[in-house]
Amino acid sequence: MPDSSAKSDSPDSSVMGLAQRGVGLLVPLLPLWALRSVLRGRIGSGPRALFVCGALLLWLGHLFLTFAALVAMSFVQIPGRPPPPSTVSIWVVFTALFRGLVGTAAAQLLMTMPTDWLFWRAFRELPEELEPFQGAVRTRIAFQRAVVRLIGTLFVIGFSLLPLSALLVALPAVSPSEAVLTDTVRPVKSWWRRAARRAPAALAGVVVLVALLAFAIEVVARMPLPTGGQMSTLAKKVLSYSVADFPLVSQFAFREDPRPDDLPSGTVWLEAAELLDKQKSLQKAVGRANLGVEARTQAQASLADTETEIAARTPNSPRLQLLQNPKLAPILAVPVWKLLPPVLVDHWPFVLLIVYGTDLLLLLLIGKVPLAYNFRYLWVRRRDTALTAVAFTVVVALVVVLLAFVNGMY
Image (cartoon, rainbow, N blue to C red; front, side):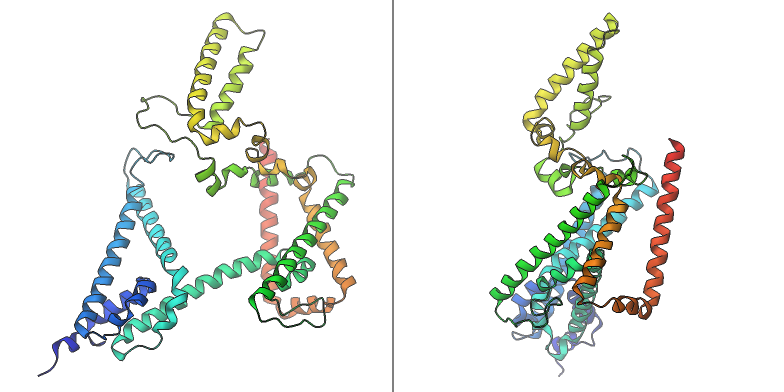
């Protein structure tokens, strides 16, 4: 008489095959590794089938609850966030569903990627009954590696914009057994020695980068250039946020006051910066000499109400405390471009040109990387070179058109 439990647990069974593929694609490997004896069927095929189906159902339920919570956040008032839309339309529902899907996918990656690479080797050799699960795990690991490669490629592209001399000096920070500036490198095998070689290399790369930037800023500062430049508008727009506006800093250290739930209808709720700006404008209005008696009385009453609101909100408002702090506000609560040298903001294209020109001179003086290698690389990778040139040309053209439009509007 055939064994019905073995038949239902075979990879040919459509239900068990789908369940194994679902577990292999979705469930984190950490709990599966902890219960791998049950998954391998050492205590029987029946408990393994129950474990696979239970794990899949539990994780699908968890993902559904995450998706439902993210969708509900678009229709529920949350302190510190804009109010939900008053009318529900197809576009609002579509936006909420899209946010839920993206958030659920991001949560899935965050809950699986940090630990899967530690345990996936334990699932490379499994019984034949777990072939669908093993194939799904391989697909999942391949997808995670593709995501890691994409992120690494973005970092490589970002680092490739740095001066080559700084990268050559900092090369041992990435590969302690390799170097370009020296002919021979003593191999190191212990973790402590590799760390001791990486730290000075990273510090030396940062020092070279800062020295090149400081030299370029000093050279541009001595050039006969106007105080403001056409490209300064772009730099001020890009660097218009402050340190306190960074997501992590603003969320935990200097968060905004949440909008009260019992706020009367028709009452305007001002954020910390808007409240202080209102106070300053009212103080200027009260100080005007040509202001009428009635207008002055109204301005004084509004100023008193505003100062009372500021005094009431300040003890429980980290953002108000920061904006009123005379020592921290000029550093953390001002736009980033105000913390940079004026030359770097007004004439940053000239600074970059001098940085890269000085970097090229340093490379020619060092002589470790022949200049012919660079031209040979441009020809060998001519398709990438052409795409890069086209991309830079399009970006510069768009910037020129946008700046011309802004200046025309002014």
